[in-house]
Image (cartoon, rainbow, N blue to C red; front, side, top):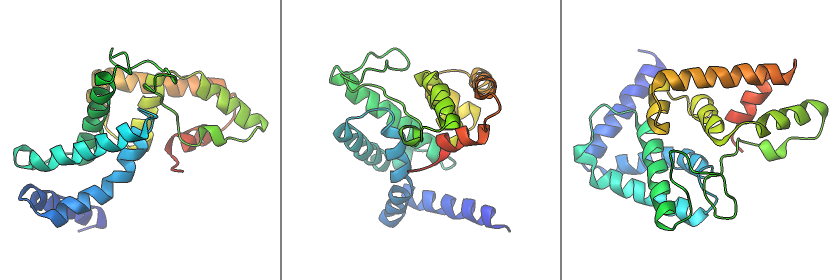
Length: 201
């Protein structure tokens, strides 16, 4: 049995223990996913209090609803999708977003602002200027598609469910974005672009 198989088996046991009310298992899930949820949530809102309250609400709901959850679940996908919904609900209650699929980018209202990792830290050499230009031409939905695919490694089915589109559409849109990036980079490294998408601060 390889390490990956052991890891999957270990997490399944943790999940089943959590469903039975084991607090150690719950704490392990919390510690393992908090940073990733915070990183994703920080791209959905720039209001840190809303983000932190949403994460706490998410884990509270996870614990209180544990017995109703499936035994086999992609936990990362479930948590990301649930966090997005929780944040949107909080923003909408405060009247701070226009809810029409994806929210608009409005920095004054603190609504949906999706930035890729380290985008603002790019230096001003020629390749990075071009990379910054390519990043600037992506809309919010395109940025989130890349982030979910290359940073969180979700399937197209999972991405589609988070964004409210079908899996084939998610796949085609990612391919179109990558094709556009390759054309616009004019010989510069696509790997550098994906590094910006994937790399943690």
